[in-house]
Image (cartoon, rainbow, N blue to C red; front, top):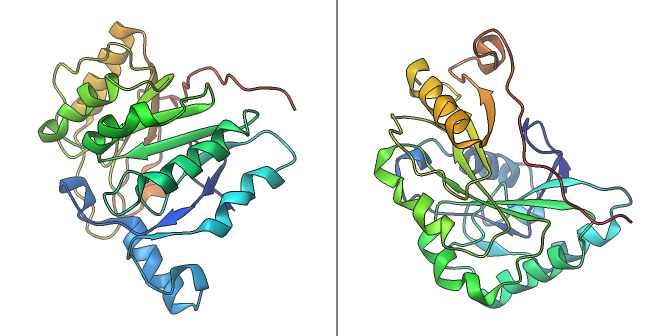
Length: 240
């Protein structure tokens, strides 16, 4: 586990690592770059770089947390990658099921596999399920997510690299928007962001603006219309 600088979570937990690119949002994957760096540093967990790997030893970690946490699951991977066995995904869900005091945020670009196996998973109240929607070419992921048994559903429109007109936000609880960051970051149009915010307002969906991004994301910041937008779904967790 690790404390996280990601604005919409508190920490990360990676029972799997590694991934492969499947859409335009993956072009400058931060996790791939970080995996190479960690491998070069000699971190055992990343000895295989960005190859998809499962880590049985990581499954016990959430049982050791003393206080309630908001946790981004697999910031360095995609839990629904085809190379991750259903049996291991079920083990990850069992851990989340048995730690109801924590909120687990799971994010995937593989909404097709998510829908394919969602009935074989136990969707307790503390598991938030999201899909990445970076441009109009992958908006179908929203419809796939909507069909799952997840109690709380969210969209991560980051890196936002195109307009997302007329999204169907029915039964979607939360939308995160952010621009790409880094040396080769693709630009994000302010009109794209404002349109998504308006869609969220009309649909009564929580809206979270993460960042403008760019080559210096600290400089561009995360102010929109002169303010920050940090809306989130209500945390629904069990007391310790």
